[in-house]
Image (cartoon, rainbow, N blue to C red; front, side, top):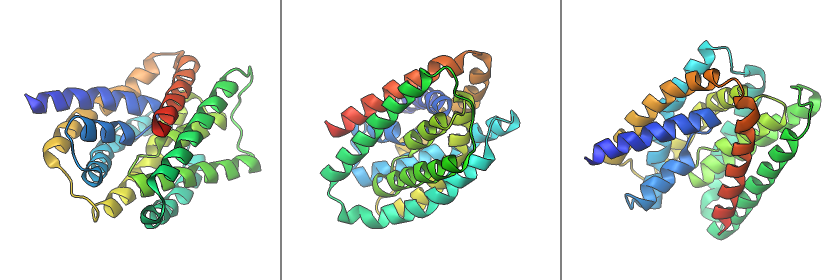
Length: 246
């Protein structure tokens, strides 16, 4: 019965995170620690391992649809991968309270920025020199989140992509592509700190794969998703930021 519950949870999480462009690290982390009472180190490693297959499947489906912006995604990835390593080295030196407050504030600010962006009538995609620095900055921040806390780092990635003018579908697709690299590196680094709980991980992984298969096709069916999904993403970022601080 437990495996069925895990698969159902995984399906819902897989659909949600691939639609929103996240890896689901924070959600998996919450499920594994709150419901299954896993130690933090084990939960972090398991959540990253669990997210990788669904990210691969979701990104491949988006690639088939031509939705991934590789130009911006590669810049984010190049900045994020070293940041994952740096974050893992800094993790033992940063007080948990300080880190959580900083991350919470960043998520709240990103959410507010997306709200302001969606209110603008013109938000055309821009690949100017200024956006190159934004891509590097958001990518680096995402990598730090993966390296330090074992989160997927999807929040800063998809928020940055939306703020740079990508619509929700392209932002979700490009984010999934970037998070494949950061999740793999993060999982390898966190394996040394905590073992994978395959009992919980396999069920979530199977469900997440099913959800990741469905999500990209659902996104293309809802023609107005680029209008109503960004505000939802903004609210989620703000709520996650507040809950992180509290």
